[in-house]
Length: 258
Image (cartoon, rainbow, N blue to C red; front, side, top):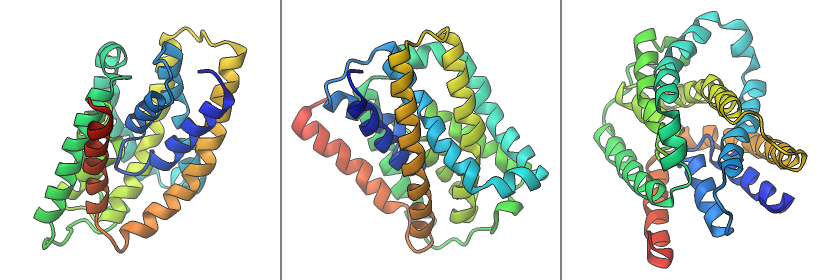
């Protein structure tokens, strides 16, 4: 990473896309490629770590749930377990071979976009059976967590995986979106802590400054993105996000190739 400007751009991309079903990691990988940035170990760590800025936005916006709803905290922990176990087991493979690969990202964006559209069409006339966040069961929490584990593949999107898992379980779209927000806290917190631990905290003062800038920018942008997303899904389906993912794949391949 060569300058603060790149950190700001990646922070904006992270804040905008972390909670939308379009893959924040995938967008940061593609953005870094457009900026001509080398996918060094630090950049991979940066792409994981600045997600904490977006996660802090969730903590602040949903502090009332995190501090007063013990049952919900238990469900979030249960949902985190599959990703925690699988993420620990496959950390090396993901960071070495998948993170930084625009090819993996593009195909995952395409597949996820198609899946979002198909799922919405199949569920178009089916009413949700779980209508609120509080009604989500422990079993549903675990299944949503299993779905989230697919997001270890860059481009799949943690948000998209959890949302599609919830929709498949016939959970109200706003309820599963908020659950996805909350589940991001332990998931991304653990991912960042483990990555920094494995990397031996080998970050220079300048690199730490880049991380701080990306963190703050992603936090500010994420607050606006969360509020927009909640308003949007109250009157729209997730199909536009599926179309966007497919369009991004087509445009990228047409102009830049795979």
